[in-house]
Structures are given as structure tokens and as C-alpha cells.
Length: 314
Image (cartoon, rainbow, N blue to C red; front, top):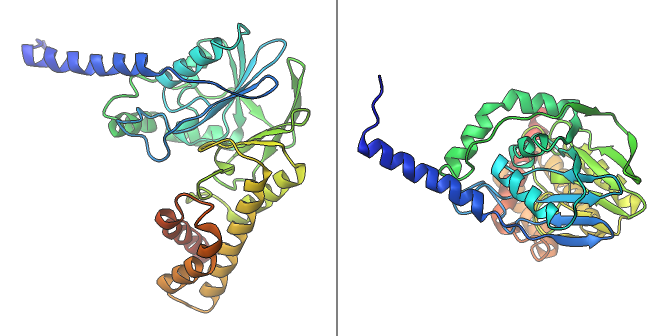
């Protein structure tokens, strides 16, 4: 039988104190966006870490006559509980609905906190399948990256599957679901509030950072989705990371991605080396976009590399 030693108990105490510290330190502030629409904006951008305790993505919520709709639940159950606490500082309405924008862990691992509140959790079939494929692995990975600061997270998958172009009225608020056709990742979905002229986009939408590329994203479909969003002419754009923004960011991203795609395509067709294509992209687009994206200098190589690989697979 295992007998805990004094040293073992000491390590256990340190671990528990870290988890409890993480639980008490999530005191999120709420930003009022427009009538009955709110955001919880993460100041951190990038991978989960011990410093940010895994909190690196935004969540948004809508207060309706019959309950609260939440868009994205964060990277852990602890963060989910922090979001719930923040929502309750604004309204006494119950949290009834949750939408996961996509399957990347920083946008849905907080689901368990909301499931325990009785909320119905929505996403697309492709996203749900990807979540289940990742499973416990992403919980463990986030725990390692944050040195245990994400605590213990139960897996809670969406149970309600959204359909393309689906429309619903939740608590008196009209909502439209827009599929990105796997532009960022398989199964991305955006929430459009036509009366409020607000769109919530997860990682399909950006503000002050370069559009986020992933190995499984479809760049032409992402460009098309951004064009669709721009045609809606939203007054307010709520991205998955970064500051609240406007339709100008959507138009900028569509134009930028199309320019990069075309430059890489032309270079690939002429059998140019990657370094030459990267140099052309940076020299051609840098003068316009360096001041518009905080990470142009640090992330453009990765973005071009991702698009270059996608060209190779065509």
C-alpha cells in the first residue's frame, strides 16, 4: 500500500495551493459592448503559460429576457467558473446557452463549469468530432504548459449540433449561425446578432494580430467567410483574441490574406524557394501592414510557411 511521506505531502500541498490560487485569482472584468452584449477580454495573447494560467482567449455573452447566451468558455474549468462569476456580476439571469466557436482547447475546455449550471452547449458536428478526438490529451497539455495552473478540468462536449445557416430566437434575441467552412479549423462557427449588428467570431476574426493560420484551415474559405462578414457590415466585431474591433479589421484581413495567398501561389508556380517567397511577401506587404498588425515582424514567417504548405498540397 502507498504510504505518503512528508516530502510527498509537501509536494501535494504545493500543488493544491497553486490550484487554489488559480481558482481565486480569476477575477475577470466585464466590458459592456452594446445593449445586453458583453465581453471578457483576455490581456494575454499566445500559448497557455504559467503566467497567464491558461487564460489567453476572449469570451462574450448576451443577456436575454430568459437567460444568458455565452460564446466560448476558456481553457479550463477554473476559467469557466471565473467567467460565470463575471456574468453573475452583471445579471441574475441563468446561463442557459453556450456556443463553442471551434475545437481549439482554449475556447471550450471551460464547458464543464457551464454544464454544471445546466446550460445547453452548441457547436458544429465537425468541431465536436475534433474535440472528442483531442479529448483528455489537451487537458493534460494545458496543465503541463501552465505548470498545473489550469487545475482539474472535466471534459464536457457540446450536445446540440448546429446546422449551416441555422437561425434561432433565444430569449427574444434573434441569432444567426454562420459557418466558416473550416476556414480557421474544421467546423468554425460565428454568431451574428442582426438587430445589434454584432458578430462574434472566435479565431476566424482578428483585431490587432495577424489572422491565425492552422494546419487544418482552408485559406480560400477563410477569405470568403471574411468577405461574407464584411458584407453584413457589423458595427462591432468580437474576435477570439485581442481587442474589440470593427468591420474595418475584417476587410483588412480579407485583403491581406488574399494578397499573401496570391504572392505565395505565384512564387510556388515559378518554383521559387520559400525564403524568396517570404522575402517578397514581407517587402511587398510590410509597408502597408506592419503598422496594422502587432506581430507582423514576428509571425509573418509562420503565416507564409503555413500558406506555402497548403499550396504544396493542392
